[in-house]
Amino acid sequence: MKLAWTEDKLGFLIQFTFKVLLGIIPLISIWLFESLIDSISYSISQHVFVFNIILFLLGLSTAAFVTFLLNKFSEIFKSIFTYKLESKLKVRIFEDAINIPYIKYENAEFQNQLSRALGGQKNIINIIDSSFTVIQHMVSIFSIMAYLVRIDYLFIMLIIIMIFPLYIIEVAYGKKRFDLNVRLTEIGREEGYLESLLVRRESLKEVRINSLEDFLISKWKSIFLTNSKARIKLDIKQSKWLIFSNLILFISFLGSGTYVYFLILGGSLSIGIMVAVLQSIQRLQGIVGSFTGNLANFYELSLYVGEFLEFVPKYTQSQNNKRHLTSIDSIEVKNLTFTYPGLNHETLKGIDLTIKRDKKIAIIGSNGAGKTTLIKCLLGLYSTKNEIFINGIYEVNEISRKSLFNRMSVLFQDFNKYEFNVKENISSSNISNAKDIESMNRYTSLTGIHDYLESLPQGYESMLGRLFHGANELSGGQWQKLAIARALFKEGDILFLDEPTSALDPDSEYYLIKNLLEIITNIGLVYITHRVNVAKLADEIIYMKGGEVIEKGSHAELIRLGGEYYKLYQKQVELLVSEKKEGIYA
Figure 1 (spheres, rainbow, N blue to C red):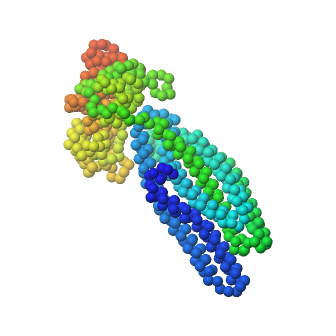
Figure 2: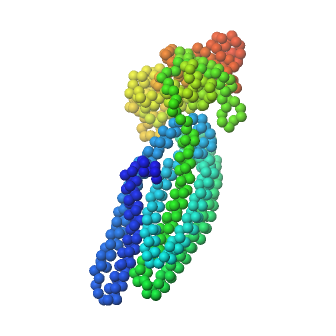
Figure 3: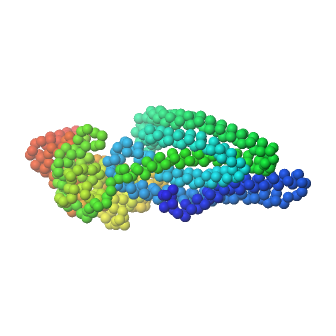
């Protein structure tokens, strides 16, 4: 509630006022009904026309109409209030998530908590809505209780008997539902993953070619049933207790009606009051059920919200008091060792290397050698301890991540294919320069994709992908060339390319990297490749195996060394010669 008040005071006050008014109207209706019945009774017994009957009927009709209006206006203002609050909460989540270490996203338990946290902002909206509904019901209950107590104090006991059993049951099972949701979070994520495999364009090709539909549907059904059975089992248990508590409500209504009847026989109550009392108790039955349900829902949602509010501070790393970086002239790595959380073996071991702004470095090695992990450490995506230094002075953890990322350009193997137009696709690496069309043209020309992009129906304004109407899909190689142009457009001090040309043929890869090395002379370049003819273009080659740098030097130096790099070189040359002889590669 404090959050709602802070974010939108006017919306909060309007909602609060509507709920209080809606809470008072039931009492007004009961009083009008009591007066109407007494007036009718008097009119019949005295055989006279009582004008007040018309007024009471008008009052009841007005109360019903005002209730309708208040509910409609409340819904409208609730929607406005909800959209404003939801927008602010989502922006807060997105902004706070910037400071969550990247490696956390590779942890399954973190993903479970993240899944619940993302639902947490919805729960904040729901808990505020429940709070307003609880306020409305409290006003109704206390006002009707005050009316009943005016008639007889024993009705206080009636209210207590009606409320407490329901409240205890609802709260107890609210906590059990929360605990069940926590246990089922990972199962729910797996269920969602299987759904995505069955409908996502990226996965459908392989699913259909391999006729995986039946297998995936069967697997999804199994998980869905496990999930639903656990929830149904809990609902059945709760329903048994709710039947018992509602039986108490039924008995209390029967008992109070009988008690009121005896009070009438004793001459202490009029017919109008009897009808009004019975109507009050009947209304209370509905209000109490809703009140205890919303109160328990408030408690259950507060558990989710509590987890949500703890989530961001638990995982974020403060960027306050960090150094701001204006440029990167060098990156020095000293005895870098890295182990993924949850693993008991080192992925990187004792890495030493220096990257300078005017230096071009190729990293080569077999799959699993640790090449991509090294790149992520150098970029600051993975945390290290006093092992990576920027400009020979600052340890990487002393520098704000934002200023560090601003000075680096990167293209990963699994780069994003943004379903935007061409200009937005390229400028997404450097939004502040989104209008620099000249640079875009230069870099797309360098990567060999410019002419094709210009030939699209709207040129650089053309939408890409297949997600939206009128978009244009690119081939794998074209996407890769566009992504390289995007990395270059950022114009960082160091450019990292993680197998940037894996979708290109050997000739295209060779000439693309060759052009890059000739043109981008003012920045450092680190690229991962599996092809020796591409690696030898670099100033220095780093050969990795088993998480270690086992050889480094220029192509000529490593050939003279006659080690692992030389063996790989010989193997690839022999394969190339063999393919040419057989006419496989020309």
